[in-house]
Image 1 (cartoon, each protein chain N blue to C red):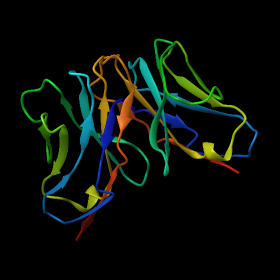
Image 2 (image 1 turned 90 degrees about the vertical axis):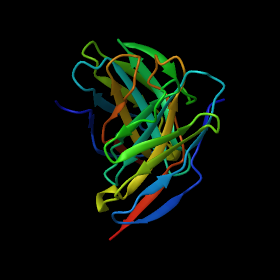
Image 3 (image 1 turned 120 degrees about the vertical axis):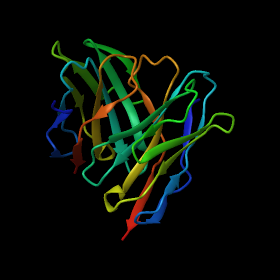
Image 4 (image 1 turned 180 degrees about the horizontal axis):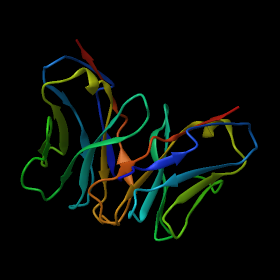
Length: 116
Length: 113
């Protein structure tokens, strides 16, 4: 069965520093996609970044980058130059290989607090 | 371009009642998925609709149901509410089945008393 594990319930980072949020996954499917979402206190899930299992390069979206290590089944999110507005809950998620589905498996999330 | 719209934002119901939540996807999106978020269980997939057909279903009892209309708007219904149904219900839409992004709404916070 597919599974996403986020082992850091909470993290602190100083403003302007970089932070890495950990995510490991488990799947037997050779084709899959990995996502990171941000959920501020308002509740909305905001898409941050996506990595396909066959993508050769690590995904980047502005200050967000995904450190994809396929052999270790890890997909860590790196946020560079943290801002106060980055304080939120962060979720790692995976979809299965068919791609034809809106079903994502989510991890338990990591709460990030950025200190001024 | 408007995002995913969920109504109502907050809802308070009592045990035994039923509730209907609404989701309007991004214009042009044909896939709508529903998720339940609770502090204990986290985010769990409820079901997905694509072109008015349920394409995928999570492990929830039959009290949870949904439908999608021809304009892609979707509703989910929970009958005979239980205290454990208190949760944030999130709707997400994508253009077709082959997604790289799933766009979420702000959710409906349901409290069952």
